[in-house]
Length: 250
Image 1 (tube, one colour):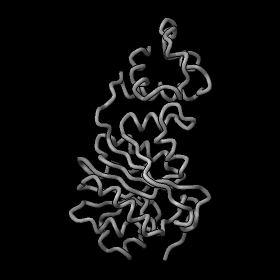
Image 2: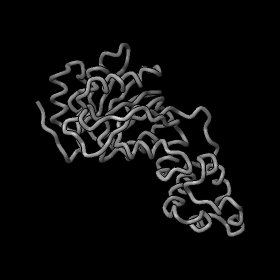
Image 3: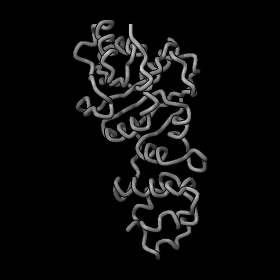
Image 4: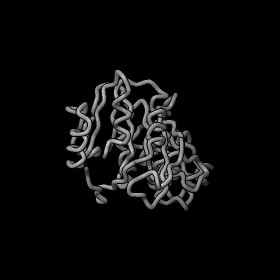
């Protein structure tokens, strides 16, 4: 068997119905290439390998788990990328789907990795700490709406699918969990540049209690700051408004 490594944020899914529900969530949208992040003991993997006509790969950092997976699922030969997902190069040419029970200690960084690959990720279904999942799908006006909400929703439609009880894992985590799905937005937002959009969003939320006039003073000419939109706070702006505001930046 294998051991659990807390340093890697390992909490292995053991509930078969939840595994089937996650697989159903990705199968709702057709794909031909699939990347699983953090297969661990293979709870999801065994179902994913049953999906016909799919080019499958998985990325796993823990050498012990890699050896266990190869022994348990011989079909994984030459399909395991033995490294951290944060260091992984794009695993496929063209469009692919991503799925995983993500290590909670790097789940936000995994989302930024998905954003790096956004031109090719056609769907992502992932397990996150509940609070992170809620932040990703939050809309303007919500107290948990923030940087990750805006940056993800600028490129993906985020769906909160279902919550998962702690007892569905070994060991049981001390936090609630939830599964979300990302699909590319139907129509891309028009912005001056992704770099300026990211800078604007991060600067605005860095001082989220201040009005945008005070929080964004360094990014706009003084005469621009007279616009009424700068009376608002970051959490009140929609993704569309952030995108439009990039055209007024210095």
